[in-house]
Image 1 (cartoon, one colour):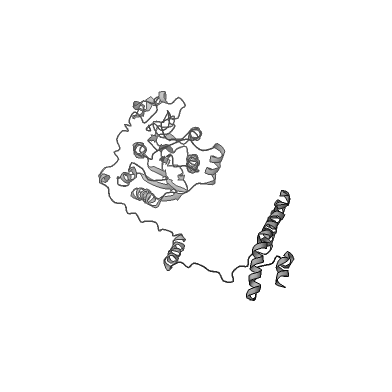
Image 2: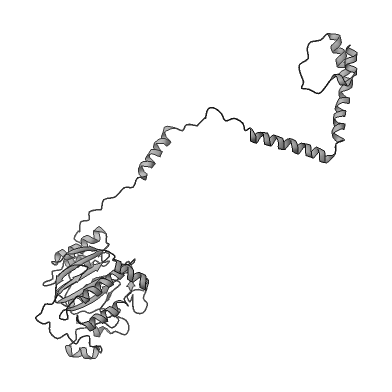
Amino acid sequence: MSEHSTASPQAHPRRPIQQAQPQSADVADASDATGEETAPKRNWWKLAALWSMPAWLVSLLFHFLGLTALVVATINPPPLPETLNLLAASDEPLEELEEMVVEFEPEIEPEMEVEMEAPDMLSESFELTALTPDAAMMSESISVESLMPSKPADFAGMDPNGLMADLDGMGAEVGKMAKFFGTKAEGQRICFVVDNSASMTSGRMETALVELDKAIDSLSAKQKFYIVFYSDTAYPLFYPTPAMEMVNANDKNKKLVRDWLSTVQMCWRTDGRDAITLALNLKPDLIYILGDGAFTDKADIELANTSLKGITIHTMGMQVKKQDRDKFAAIAQAHGGTYKDVGITDEGKQLMKMNGPIPRNQKRNGIWGIKLK
């Protein structure tokens, strides 16, 4: 029985190896003996069967098996674990996260209260002497001597357009109230000191020009006025061919002012000393000062501490910081005037949109920025 089972290869079909049941010693010895003889034959038979297959069939078989395994893995993915294991961090990172959330909330800082301290230069004051600007104050075509006080007879040669025709005498009539950015005041000789620094952007400068035109247009023919811009230096009325004195607010001069305002440009720096000195030497009884920040040469502090008789000064801040607002307010308070916050108007925005941005001069261009390098 044992010999028959080992002699025929059909008695051992291919199946997983299983642990054999105990047999007698004789049967086991016979099986081992016959196994040693038949095992090499069986292995060579398998290799011979594989080598006898065409190469394309072998490749197709392996590709089919790989594709089948991929489909099975895709359709039946391995089940997710019933429990989710997380790595818990220490308490310190959690505390840092909470601090970050708190810091993300915006904080509104209260405006810092600024107290104006008396600087060393407060003993100085503006002297109302004849204006003697340096040679760079005007363009090359304007001599320094032309800015010095002149006799009325000399104006005929300097004023071919007749701007000074009505300068003789102030007259007994006071005229209408002046009005600039809504601030009304009574005055016969009115001077507007206006910022044309490079920071007057986004419609600020355009708004100032529109309000200047409206203020001049509201004056009566008996009132006199003057405009001086300040940035790197003073730019007087009708610059670069400036008027030597205040002009009457007649229709002709109002038209000339309107045309001149359309030529004004902006320049770097915010030095107000030259402009304020020029304004005071014109002997006004009313001054309006408009700016978007403090003077860089501390002219505002000096003006607030200078005693001026018979001159009312009103100030306006164009979207200024609190510390600059305090300085403008101090000037007005010292000279019987008021301070007012002003902003960009719709008319100013429309003018900027229509004409484009006003040129800003970072260096001298021949006419504007004459004190810049």
